[in-house]
Structure formats: C-alpha cells, structure tokens
Amino acid sequence: MIQGTPEDIIQQSIDSIEIEPELLTLERIEDTIRSTKQLRDDKIEALFAKNTQLQQLVNNYTNEINLLNRISDYNYEIIQGLSAFKDYNVSEINKDENIFRVLNKKSIELDNLKVSIAKTLNDLESSLSSLKLSKSSLGIELDEIKEKVVSLFNNPFERRENDDLLDQDSHILKINLYRNLGVRIENFDTQENENDRVLVFNKETNLTSVLKVDDKYSDFFISNYIWDTITS
Image (cartoon, rainbow, N blue to C red; front, side):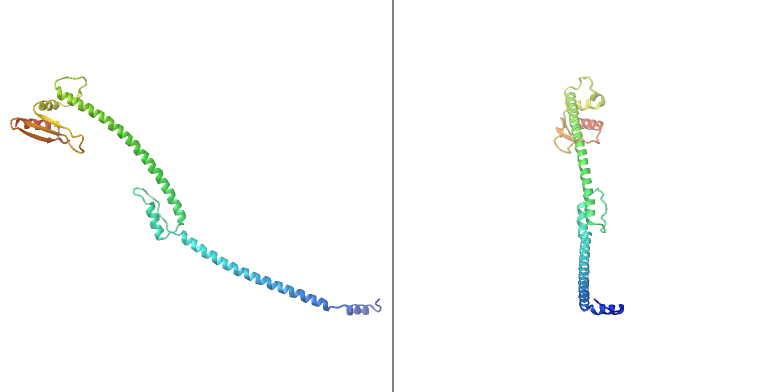
C-alpha cells in the first residue's frame, strides 16, 4: 500500500507508470495510418488516371461515331441517286443531319412512293379494263355499220326500218351507184395507220385511179372525184 502525502502518492503513481510500450503502440498506429493513407492516395491517383484514360477513350469513340453518323459526299451521292425519281418530289438531304435519321426518312418516303405506285397501277388497270370494254363495244358497232354499208351497196334502193345511215348522208347513194359503175373500196383494217383506198376503173380509158381516203376529205369531195374520174 502506498503511504505518504497525496503529492507523494501521485508522484509515486506517475513514476510507476511505464509509457514506453504505449509510445511504441502509438507509433505503430501512426505508421499504420500513414501507410493506409498512402495506399489510399495511390489508389485514388490510379483511379483518376484510369478515369482520364477511359474518358479519352470515350471521347475518341464518340468522335468516330459522330463521323460515322455524318453524311459524306460519297454517301450523299448514293442516297440521292437511290431516292431520286422522275416526277416525284423528295425531301432535300441535309449533310449535317444524322445519316441514320436521313435513311429512316428516305425509307418512309420510298414506302409512300410504293403505295402511290400501287394506287396508280390499280387505276391504270381499271382504266385499261374500261378501255377494253369500250373497244369491244365500238368493235361491235363498227361491225354493225359495216354490215349496213355492205347491205346498202348490195341493195341500194331497199328501204329499211331505222336505217339512219342513208338519211344522214345522201352521197352514199352516189357511192353505191359508182360501185355499179366500176368503183371498188378496199379496207385496210389489218394494216396499222393505213387508210382505205377507192379504186375507180374507167372503162373507156381502161385505167384504174386510186384515191387514198383521208379524214380531211369530205364525202362530197370523194363523190365528185369518183364522178370526174369515171366521166373523164
């Protein structure tokens, strides 16, 4: 038991304390903290360096992607050539625009063009069918008129019901009369762009004259030509 005055007791207690081990422990703790801090700083520096490297790599890839997205002169000519059609308006190509956005826009325009062409083709097919029906109807009417003309030539003085062909043109009587006098009409339905021809045979001169029938010739002119040729 420690005896003495309080001051002596305190001094004896202080003297009995060994601080060397504690100091060594504190030094080891400080060394550990210092080493840990250095490792942390080195790790942070390495991470910053890696981050800078990755950021530079990202920037490089971004620039390359931007270059790929841009429309070069070569790509411009190709897109312009593939999307240009006569009599069809297409949007202008902006070289500063993203190429994939432009391609998507052109794809939509081509789809719209396909729909328009399909509609036009359908309309043309409908018109063609209508024209074929009209051609068939006109062919039937033409055959009926030809039959009337042949019948009229063969029986010029026979009156028929609803025979408006004779009423419409009195010169047909002359032509029928000329036929009996040696006039023959040749039809060239089988030859494209070939008009009918009127062959007039003059018995006195033993000569045959040919008149190519043209739309500009009236029936009156044709009748007079035939008459003049026969009587000359």
